Image: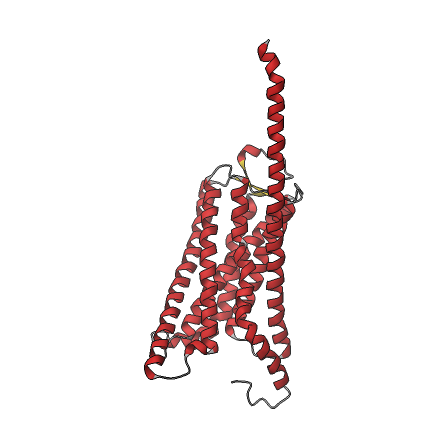
Length: 336
């Protein structure tokens, strides 16, 4: 009898706790949604304006540098990675549930992974090319300095093809929340779910992605170390010779320092993203906050990178305006 009388109070207490928990989750969802929305909008505007900057230079008739070509593909990849993850995460965080079909979920995640992969490859290519470009004439890279520009276009398109092919595997196991699949056999990623892959296929996909990412990171670290060493040696040489001009104040040095900043930012966010990704993969049913934090960290580099590049191009924008006026004058100083 006593047990029967105590049930309503326990039930009410449980209901009250559920309401409090629901309220907290709703508030946290709004905060997460605002973070995703801000990150996506700011990043999309930054990347779009920078891409427009390069497009205007191309239409005006300025010669496109090899580093600019790589940066254009990096910007497109960043836009793919940012929009294809940020938009659905924002929509889902603000309470819109089950809005993607299987095809929509597969397409968005596929394009996100391709954009992420091309972003890694482009950043790697950019750092390696710049390290070769500023290497001394008597170094082991002297022959590569002549040959490297010829393979820039081929390397960029090869990166796109490789990541387009490798990430096809993701299509087979991602589903939208609308599907009436057995929820116990799936892993929840918020707006999408994933069916657990066959062990062999999952190992193959993980090996391919891990190998390509590790190779790119290794090359980036090598190129960054080489650039830092070259800048340091040049600075010491200039101080020894007592010259007023130095590589540090040259456009070549400013570009190198910007690329070093870009690479170090990428490696930092990529390392954090990998930690979150491993945790989400290992845990059978990861907490929603862990998944959201991983997505926020993953979108940080695509959102911040255009502003790092604009910090270098703040002076270049003024030079471009003077260059436009100089186009009316005979092309005496075009190749300076």
